[in-house]
Structures are given as structure tokens and as C-alpha cells.
Image (tube, rainbow, N blue to C red; front, side, top):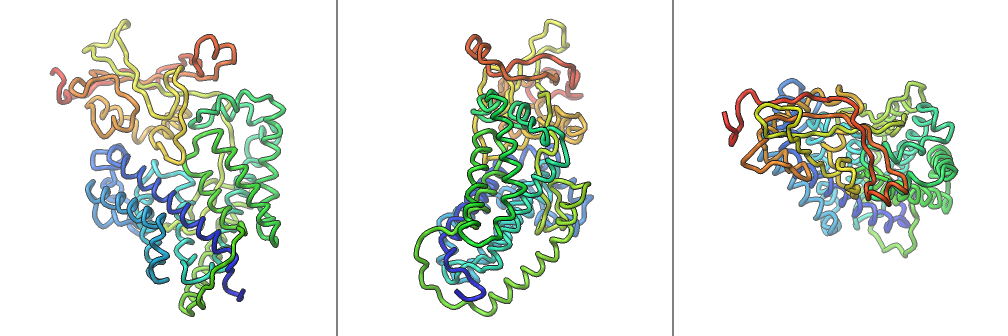
Amino acid sequence: MDWFTAPDYWLSRLVFQRALAGLYFVAFLAAALQFRALLGERGMLPVPRFVARVPFRRAPSLFQLHYSDRFFALCAWTGCGVSAALVAGLDSRLPLWGGMLLWLVPWLLYLSIVNVGQTWYGFGWESLLLEVGFLAVFLGNDDVAPPVVVLFLLRWVLFRVEFGAGLIKMRGDACWRKLTCLDHHHETQPMPGPLSWFFHRLPRPVHRVEVAANHVTQLVVPFLLFTPQPVATAAASLMIVTQLWLVLSGNFAWLNWITIVLAVSALELPGDAPDLPATPLWYEVTVLAVAALLLALSYHPVRNMITRSQIMNRSFDPLHLVNTYGAFGSVSRIRHEVVVEGTADDVPRRDSEWREYEFKGKPGDPRRWPRQFAPYHLRLDWMMWFAALSPAYAGAWFGTMVERLLENDPATLRLLRRSPFPADEPPRHVRARLFRYRYTTWRELRETGACWERTYVREFLPPTRLTRPAAGQRP
């Protein structure tokens, strides 16, 4: 092995690249299917309005140059197509420079989406996908062995993801230090999965072991990534097991999956490395220059990570090249949910029939069991969780969402599991109410079949109607 490459990691690179391309595909698919109601010309937070007030240098994006719903759809579906081609290994059938350019396409397209995505794309895993996707451009294909420096940078990202998350927990909610956070987390997390009820009902001593194991994995194990093999492989494997446990316990979009993919790049998988040609000088120079840039850009994320005022999930450059990460620095003790309802009555009365809108992922009907959606990201459902924490999180978009429901807007209704109103008969009024949700006990589950019990808390939005009738409504 020469100083620049690590042929023994060719299989790790192959698995990493194909899995990362699969996550790109999921991200672009979510964008293609959800953007019109969220970011479109008649969306809740329209892109044209955003780019009119934010300059290109602060949010570089293709959509700063031109925006239309058709163009956004073209970019999102192109991203799906290129990602599928990368899953199939098209980059390995191209010259080295061609494979690099192919990997650059989804990065540029997804950067363009994230930089105009506003609240809907304010999650840490968006920047993480971009940071990892940028490194993938320089990982090479079958024409070269994996560069050591890029493999190191991938471990550096994984270290910051895990160690940053561990630090934010220890500095944040006292329940992490007392080992009690999981007494609440499985019940109050943004979007529970089908097994979350059972995780919540585990004995409390098991929850203590879960938290303690999490601290070890996030605060100790990351340092072992930079040790010789097979210790680094053992450390990465432990991270993979921990992330799979989190996959089973909830829906966190692709956060857990991309962490697993990062950990795969640190594994020394068995298999004889193929004979690979010498590394071109231009490629070595390019990789080393990019590595120097990324290490220089790491200053602010590292400074943020080691300070007591650590901030989670922040980008320090508009290209999202090096970022800071973290999750659940605080854990809610009580779960609140915003329940949205509509009525066909011209004047809401005490005895009016209010029909509930059903969301795809967030809790609603107490008898409906949660589903597994991750790595797919239901953006509206996630933001509804934040809205229940504080109306301030919903101030920019909630009113527009209600207006679209009053219009029976098809794009908005496609974000929901079910609308209680026919397409040609929109509601006359829509309201929102806040409920407290808690998991039922084993006895309540057997008796009622409901996994949730909910209690009315207060009004979130009073009955609201359009100032002008929507199509299909009576004037």
C-alpha cells in the first residue's frame, strides 16, 4: 500500500457509495413528492418569496437563478435518476473524472434544495448528507484505490456526529446525567415508530442501561475510530449496532442510516483487493487540496463543539461542507399534539360536527398504531411536533396550511393520510386544538386496542374560514 491509498478498503468504499446513493435517492424522492405544498409557488413557504430577500452568497442555489414548480420538479427527479444510476454503479463504468462529476451532480442539486428549503430543511441530517456527499465526490471509483485522507475525513465526520451528540446531552438536560431520559423519550420523540410503545414499556433499569450505553458509544468509542485495526472496525461496528437500535425505536428520517453508512467506511471488510492502476497525480493534488480546505473549515465546528454554549445542527458555510451536529439536548416530559379539524357548517356551533384530518406519521387517532417511515422524511409531520412545543415554530406557515385545507388544495392534501372532506366539498371552517398524548398501559391496550390516550388541553387556533369562498363552496 502506498502512502496515498488504502486498497484494503475497496469493499468498504463500494458498500458506502451504494448505500449513500440510496439515501440520496430517498432524499430526492421526498423532495419531489412534497415540495409543491411546502415550497412551491403556492406553498406554505414559497421559494420565490425567499430568494427575493436572501442573496445568492448567503444561500447559493440553482433556484436563485430561476424558479418554477416545473423546474424544481425537474431537479428533484433528476436527483432521483442520478442517485439510482449511482446505486447501480454507473460511476465505476466511467473514467475517474467522469465518476467524480457524476457524484457532484446530486450534491449540487441537493444543496440547491436545502439552501432554499427554509424551515422544512432545517434538520441536521440535511447538512450531514451534503457534507458526506461532498466527500464521496473524492472517494474515487474502480480506477483507483480509496484515498487514505478521504477515509480519514469520513471518520472525522462520524466522530463529530457521535461526540457532538454526546456532549450536547451531557451539557443539556439533567436527565441524561441521571440516566432517566429514556423514561420519557420513546413517548415524546417527534415521530414514534411501530415498536416505540414497547420500548417505552421496558423496565426502567433497562432504560438506565440504554442511556449509559449511549454515553459510552458517543463519548468514548468515537476516539477509537482513529486507532489501528481491528479496533477501529470494532468501534464502528458498535456504532452500527447502536444506530440500528435507534432505527427500531423511532422515525428519525435518514439520521441513523447515514450514521451507519459513515461507520461502514471505517470497517475493514474481508475480501481480496483487486489490482488497481496507479493513482493519477491530478487526482492526488485535488484530494489533498480539498482535504486541506475541509480541515481549515473544521475550526468553527470544533470550537463550537468544545464550548459550553454548544449549538446543535449548524452550518458554518453556505455550502454545508463542515457542520456541527447533535440531537435531543433536552427531552420533553409531556407529549402534546396539534389536532386539526374541519366542519362543513356555515356557522360553527357547540354541536357542530368537527372532522379530524389524519397525518401520515404523527399521532392522531389514539387507536392508529404508528408506522415505520424512516429513512423517508415526512417534513410536515415533523414540524407539527415542533408546533405543539410552541406556536412560534408554526408562525410562518401554519396559517397558510389552514388556508390550503379550506381550499382542499390537492398538493397539501397529498401530505396527509386522509382528508375528511370530499374533493369538491371543502370545509367551511378549520380549527386546531392541542391535546396531551400518553402511551396506554398494557391493561388499557388490551381493553381498548388503543396505543394512545389523549386529553384536551386548549385551543390552538380558533375556527377559521376563508375571506372569499373556495371553489366548490357556497358563497
